[in-house]
Length: 118
Image 1 (cartoon, rainbow, N blue to C red):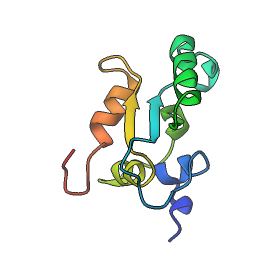
Image 2: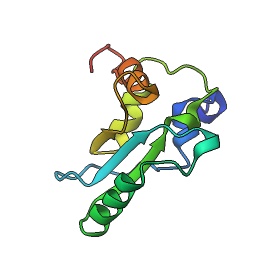
Image 3: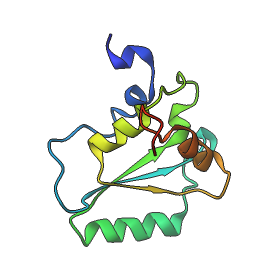
Image 4: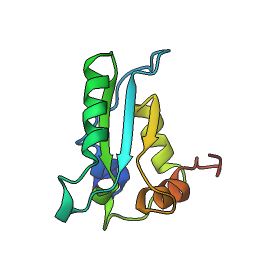
């Protein structure tokens, strides 16, 4: 069955970032996971956003912002789904969150392999 028919993490974020070929040895593809509800789409930390854009422009890094609010209402991730999605597409993950905030809880709950390893 097509993954997008299941309305999962992979489906909701597949239009944001495509799977690339083999990873390089350097950290080039970076995902920044954050939470901004639909009512506050322009409220990402402006300082962080500006710093990241300068960093991206002055290096060979490719930054992708992943909003966990995009996943609201999707089916619950199965073990390994988030981990597999990120490993296939990124070299590094940064999480913009306060302790026990939406993103922190999401990552701690779903960032596991299918064998329950972080």
